[in-house]
Length: 182
Image (cartoon, rainbow, N blue to C red; front, side, top):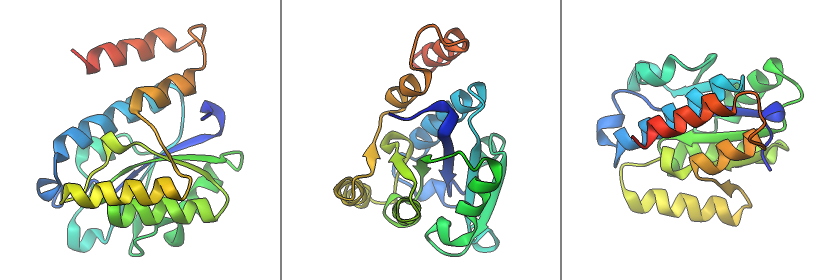
């Protein structure tokens, strides 16, 4: 189970110049923004990564606005480029990392595997992730699943973070859920 107090949310490479090429890119961004809004309400740290922003440009402004910190990286595996260090600096008690992003079969997958190799419990939210080619996303999901990385629906994750309808932020999060499906 993913816990609000030990989790971080990492939004991988939703770069504005890349997103028009991404299969169902706007849907992935919409799900990422939902996750970010919930994480913000629950005070879960949100980090972003940008792959070679000099070449690919910055993250979509809607995503970037939610990130407490954005890591510029050149390795496809963000854990090799300061992401793990940034997570530890934010809170050494973080043991769980939830990832969403693009491209699923490159930076998202390599970052997930890299963080897992460093001892983090890792989950990926497929509905908030994509690649240029749908089959590449599916291959990435299969590979990560085989490596015991959890695949979670956005709402599934949110209710794990909440744990109970008695949570002090339950009503606020429920409103975000209702707004999402409206």
